[in-house]
View 1: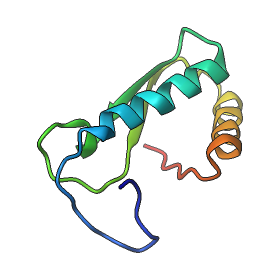
View 2: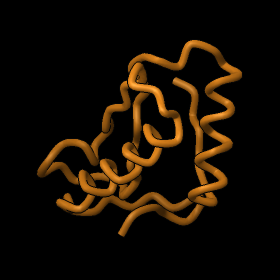
View 3: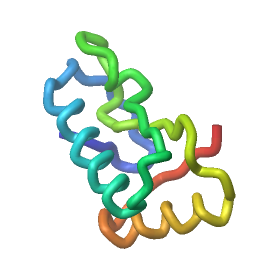
View 4: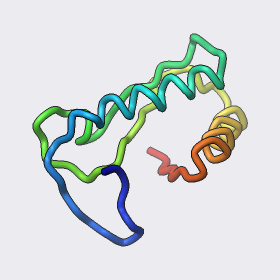
Length: 90
């Protein structure tokens, strides 16, 4: 299972599929961006094997998104493809 209903807090045992789900989304993003200068990392508790976590895959942009406008285009593409995205600025 991945994701939670709004307002719900729930921790679950680690699932091996979390890393695979991240890799699928990362590949999709990199394909849409057609940019090998972007680095996307799996961050947060779901990235740590064996850790109890909220079933939400967090992605961190390490480099490559130089302009906020470009970041907004990326977010729009994700919304179109995946129908839902929650963006929390760091």
